[in-house]
Every structure is written in C-alpha cells, then in structure tokens.
Length: 466
Image (cartoon, rainbow, N blue to C red; front, side, top):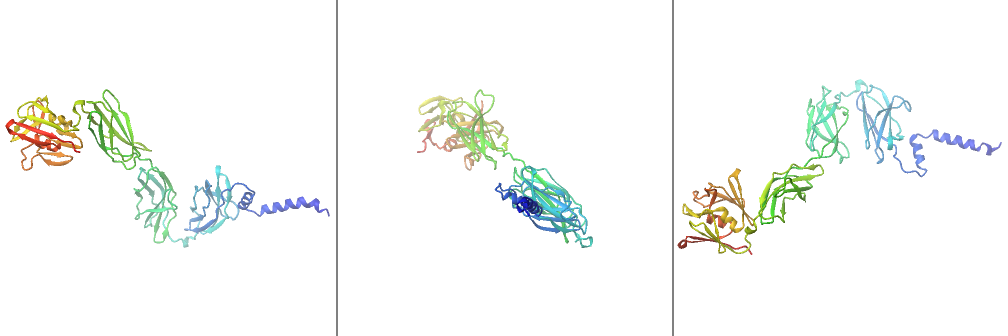
C-alpha cells in the first residue's frame, strides 16, 4: 500500500471531522487564534428561568465592549429550527420572553452582533420549561404600552396600560447612562397608570420599564421605552442696573438667576445707535461689569443675557445711565459748597454759579434743590417717574428719596430724614425742582455741614477718604 498516495485524503478527512465537531463559537475562536484582531466573544448563559406558564427569562454575561447588539433565538427543538425573537441592544444581558405555551420546553441561544450587524457566533443553547397552568403562581398580567409624555430637561410623565385585575401595585424602573443596572424609581398602588418623574438631567438618555406585582410575585416586565431629555436654556439675569461713576465710565450690576450658564453676554447701545451690539462676554456666575472709555454727558443703554451649550436665555430688562459731563466729575479732592438763604447764587470752591431756585427754610430746616447740590459734588441723579423716585449715585453711595415721604434709603437701608419728626420730608417746588433737607442729604453724602446764621450761610465741606 502506498501511504504517501493516501496521505492528502486522510488530512482532508481529519480537518472535515474537526470542523464538524466544532460549533460556531469554537470555529470563531480557532480563527482568532491565527493572529487576527480580537473579535467579540459569544456570550454564555448565566440563568434561564420559567417566570410563569407563559413567560421565560434568560440572562447571559455581557463581557464585550465591541459588540453592536445581540440576537435572541428560540426553538422548540434542540439544535434546530431556531427563530429570532428579539434583538437586544449593545450592553444588554437579559431578555424576558412572553406569550409562550404552558408546560412546554423551549430552547434558546444568543448570538453576538458586530460591525454591520455581522454575526460573530452563538452561545451554547439552554433550555427551560414553562410552568404548567396548575403550577402558575398567580402573578399579575404584565402592563403594556409604557409611554413617556411631556419630556422636559428635568422631568417626564410616564403612562402605561394596566392589564391585570389582581396586582397590588407597579414597580417602575429606570436606567440612565451612569447606572450599571436598572434602578427602582417608584412603587405605585394598585390601578395606578401614571407617574411623574421629576429627577432627570438635561440632555440625557433614559430607559424605563415597569412590572406589576402581588402577593404571589411579579409579572414580566413591559417593553422598555426610551427618552432623551432636551437641553435647558439658562434663566435670564434680573435686576440689571447701570450707574455712571465718571464722564467715561458706567458700572453694571445684575442678579445671576441661572444655575447652568457658561457665560454672560453684555450688549450696549450708544448715542445715535439704533441697535444693540455685543460689548463683552463674561464667565458664568458673573454679576457686574465696568464699561470704560465712554463719551461724557452721553446716554448708554444695556441689556444682558446668559449663555450655555443649549443657547441664550431671554434678555434682562434694559438699563441706561448718563455719563457725567466733563465739568461734573465726582469730587476727588477737598470741595467746599456755600449756599445762601434766599439767594440763587451758590459757590463751589469760590466759583460762583447760578441756580433757578433759591434755598429756603421750611419747618425750621434749610431746603436746597437736589440736583444743584448733588451735581456740585459730581454725583449722578436719576429720576424715575414711574416710582416718583430720585436716586443719587456718589462714589460708592446710593441715596434714594421720594418727595412727600419722611424717610430715605441710604445704601439700601431705610433711614428717617429727621428721627422723631415725620414732618420733615422732600417736596416739589415749581418749575419741577425736588427740594431736600440740606443737612440730611449732605451728611448722607459724607460731608460736614456748618450753619452761620449771621450770614444766612450753610457751608458744606467734602473731604475724600485717605
């Protein structure tokens, strides 16, 4: 006998026999052993359990990171006639099969899918028998049609159909991107068919499932429903204020109402400009800005809005301020003002100037026109018709007064103009001047006051700090 003649046929037969003894996963492993790149490994069943007379739940290990999904196949015969019944997604590790026949054995296998839904092999098959009708523990029917409604950046409403007449309640579960497994969100009473989930994060994907339960156990889970919460715009800033502090600078302040902003965008409209333009972009949590290099005696308008990856908030309310004229800069050195009773002439550091109204005595107190006193020190006065309010800004002081009211606010603190005498209050004097008590206002501005009765003279001195 010529052994060399029959050697090729023997090798071929041996290889064919080896291949026939290998299942798909073994062949796959052998191919990988030839130096190819690592491919997803077929899963292995960890459990297969009959839940009821009509449902089976199978679990497998998910030890891969490169799969695109799985395919669960079922048959009533071992190693034959398998049919796909579900396509769980990537990272899935269980499937509950329902609508089965009682007291019947079913066979399962799970295939792993890769790029382009290529099949990389199957698990070994497993089998399990559904319970007989008389063995069924009487668990409730599973809820169906689980749906999400009114999905916002932080919440969602869930509804489902109650198919059972014997449940004690429902267990709603949720799985988010940071959850390794399903998390119980809420347990309801019987016959409840909705739940409001208020604990979501913006721009995040979530999955939900629900099951019914009673004293005998739990139903199978419903199908899962998927949602993605939208992005959330930041809240608009509030209480925008603009205050001129010199002939070339206006300070802005606003209330930071947002908790998710990345930046604040300031827009400005100057003299002769019809539209706002972006002035500056500040970091999140900012609440103030100094606008410098402005023109004297000019009105500027401002608005602010917050920004994040979702977009921009609504604008704040607009605010405006008028820069000082070059001649009315805030006092930065010793300044002396002199006012003579019943005379429209007053003096700023010996420079005589003219008012359109003279100081006068009312209720034993000297009153002077607000604007002529404030602007003599370089303060800025803003009149708000809607509130009948005059606000004076001087250095870091803010003084608010209302004609006809016996108190004022000094840096936000309510202060009686003359303690114990509510008759002393600012008042109007035609043609539209607001008369203020000289001593109260001067001292609120940080000045000293001297009254020289023989000359009918009130002398006000301002000495800057430092």
